[in-house]
Image 1 (cartoon, helix red, strand yellow):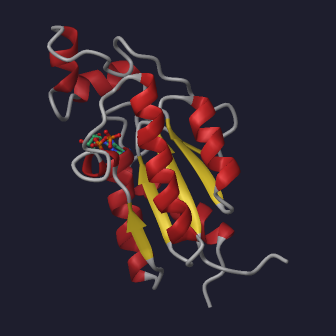
Image 2 (image 1 turned 180 degrees about the vertical axis):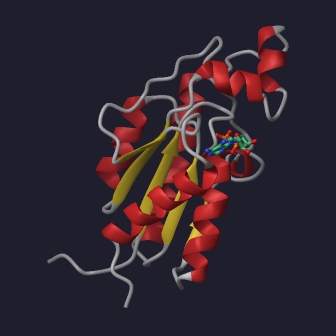
Length: 178
Ligand code: ADP
């Protein structure tokens, strides 16, 4: 029997610098204002703790996603909205998360590589182009875009506020706050 609840995993996928964390910050703030229970599992933060032992090979990336997915599942089944901004470049792994987590929505932050590279928020594209970082998604490692995401955020065309608003609307449509 299905239960009406507020738990939902919102999985943000896209290139480094696409805007995943920035949009999540705004969504988290707005959800808290509305009384939701929220947690954020940011890829960069998780890699400093839960998955610190992992690198960027396909096997390590898959393990990274599986661990994040495990925690996400625990939280969502306890009525938490979990925002997950992680590059998660492999479609099969995102589909595995969708299959495992009862309530799941995929947000594709579809900022083109050229825009991400021009922003170069963390200076990583410059290093990747110079060969100082290997296996960098979009440069010398693959990114497989979602085929059927619940939402696409085009940050090169829409403001941060608009993107946040779109995601909050999606969450509201998928949850029932008492
Ligand atoms: P990611 O988490 O995907 O690696 P970040 O959120 O760290 O990306 O960086 C995205 C950068 O793009 C930030 O500097 C942000 O201010 C900028 N930006 C410009 N327009 C947008 C938008 N519409 N949505 C999100 N970020 C945007």
